[in-house]
Every structure is written in structure tokens, then in C-alpha cells.
Length: 109
Length: 114
Image 1 (cartoon, chains in turn red, purple):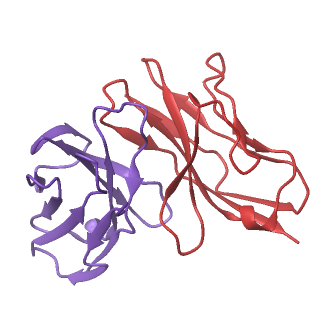
Image 2 (cartoon, chains in turn red, yellow):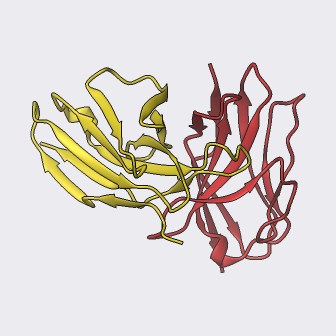
Image 3 (cartoon, chains in turn orange, blue):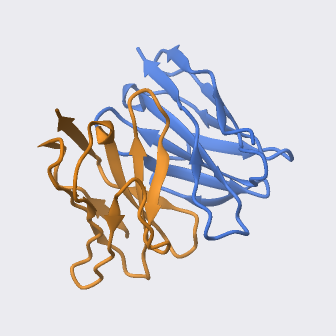
């Protein structure tokens, strides 16, 4: 069975502070991991995926297979980063995306 | 490029009734996945449809069923509705042949069971 855990329901930081949203996973196969974001009154959209190894809106995430983690990081938070963030794992068959419970990020001015 | 569209946006039903939710996939996509998102939780995978057949299923009872049509649009049907079925139902589409392509989500249908 595959499982994704986001231990923090809410993360509140001040503008300009570093941000780290935690994600841990459990999967017996080779994981493909994603971060999705939902801004207020918008649909769920892809933020980044580990195989791309790219930085989107200043966010990065590194897959650590030893710690089974895929934490999302940004060195300097902006107010427009306030949103709901979901970590997700795609199984090897590519037909099941398992989401974590989500973390609400609030960036205060 | 036309995105994923879902209808209706909101729906109110009573226990025991049946409901059908609809989803039009993004142009160029041939696979549709359905998710249930209860309040305060992440989306939970219900099932996926590809080539008009179910192509994977999560931990949901048989009263949750679906269809996919030749134009790749899809329906989610839920029979014998229960109070716990109250949730946001999300549809996502993708291109099966491109394993590197992520799923694109619709706005969802909010279903309330009274």
C-alpha cells in the first residue's frame, strides 16, 4: 500500500522567512512524487515533480529515499505563496495518485 | 487548450438517492481519474478510466461506478447515497501514453447529502 503523510496541517511564517513543508511517503516501488498547490478560489494545480528537478516560483523539493521524504522548500516566503499544498505519490502503474492531507501555508506581512 | 470541466458545481441529495457527476477531459487527454475530497482532507483516489474501461480503483465500494465515453468524457455514479458521501468530487485528466505528464484537475462538484 502507498501512503503520504504531511505532518503539519498549518504552517504560518512571516514574509521573507524560509519555508519547509514536510512530506513523508511509504511505497514499496520506485516513487514518483509531486507537489500540488491550491490558491484561494482556484483549482488544484501542479507545482513541481521530483523527476523534473526544477525550481518553480522559487520552490524546490528533493527526494530523499533513505528518509522516504520529499520536503518542499523556499528560502524566502512571499505573501502570494499563501495556499494549500498537497504532496502526492504516483504508483508505478501510473494509475493511482495518493495525496497527503495537505498543509495550509500562511505568509504574514 | 480547453481545461477540465465538471458539472454540476453543486448538488444536494438525500440519503438513499443516486447521483451522476460529469467531467469533460482537457483536449488531447485520454485518461480520466476521479477523487473524493472530504472537508479538511486530501483528495482520495476513487478510480481511473482509460479506453472506456476502469484502469485502477481505490478503496471505494461498488456503489461507486463510472463510465468513459468515446470522446474521453466521463461520469461518476454513486448509488444508495450515504451521509459520508458528502464531499468535493474532483476529476483529473491526463494523456496515458505520456507517463511524464501530470494530471490536470477540474474545479470539482460539491455534493451535499441531507
